[in-house]
Image 1 (cartoon, helix red, strand yellow):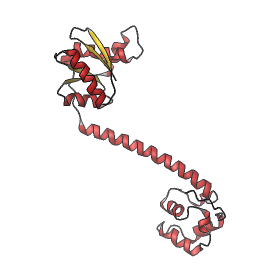
Image 2 (spheres, helix red, strand yellow; image 1 turned 90 degrees about the vertical axis):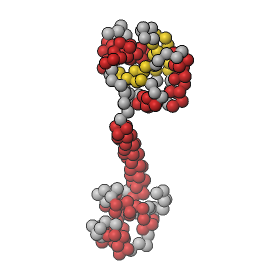
Image 3 (cartoon, one colour; image 1 turned 180 degrees about the vertical axis):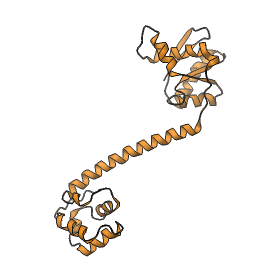
Image 4 (tube, helix red, strand yellow; image 1 turned 30 degrees about the horizontal axis):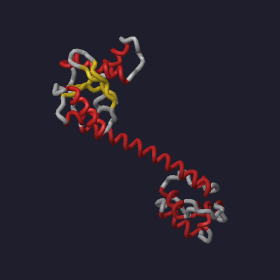
Length: 216
């Protein structure tokens, strides 16, 4: 993260780069307090409810005054400069200048715990969905390698009945000696009666029971 430190007279004192972590914030604050020599510190943050939320919460807990800077203001200020491309240093300076010039009209940052919790839940769900997709893809490859002839028997390879079958018989060789009656009973109990004798006969006729490698 990048911060620009200005005096109240628009004089740039320094810019500070620090990590987006508790340790990074602590080091950043130590540098600021040494630089300020006891003067009051006021902070302006862009995206205080997004990536900057961790820093905003840290500063608020320390008792500092923190205001929110609208990213639109930063973009507008960038367009007015000779260098219109995005730069962390220039953006930090624009944010700080906005803080000084419009301090009284800027909104104080507040932490919405419900909003943060919801955002974390959404992120967690996205991670879980991604992981679920990866696992399904890997499982599909394994099943294809083991049961290529039987794949068409199940309309959904990830249905309860299909997964129960592949779990009980992870390799076609496991079907050796299994009677139609035994497999019929198993399929019925794991499909609420939807699959039975016909499905069992189809599986046993198609499965290559000489396939011995067991990789599931």
